Picture (cartoon, rainbow, N blue to C red):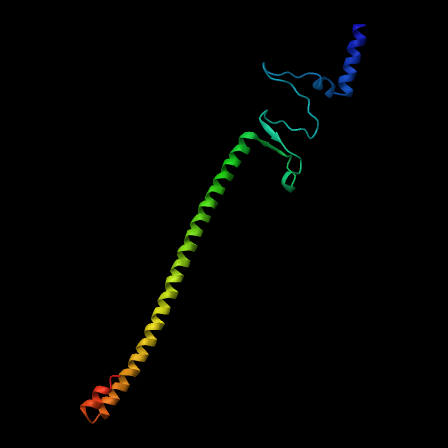
Length: 145
């Protein structure tokens, strides 16, 4: 009987050598054994699983919580940086608009002074001409009006 069993076992080993390999594995103390199929993945117990095509592309849909938390912190930091830049940009836009308003006011003041200067120059020419052609003191006094 032992010979028959030994012969049968030897035949199984020759025909299917994986028979004995698949039946024998061990784990270190405190670890769990698992049988995996072809596309199965092994991840840490703190992994978060998503759909296979999360965010529009394949990639297994797995990310470790530690990595996810790190990416979340980086994203939060980038959002904070963006908001700070947005605040600075708004401040610069406000400063620009204030400077633009002051510039327009200065242009208007300049234009007003130009008009006044032109009017005074014309008045000066009129008074000068009047004084040149005045024949009496009374005519000269009337030139300033």
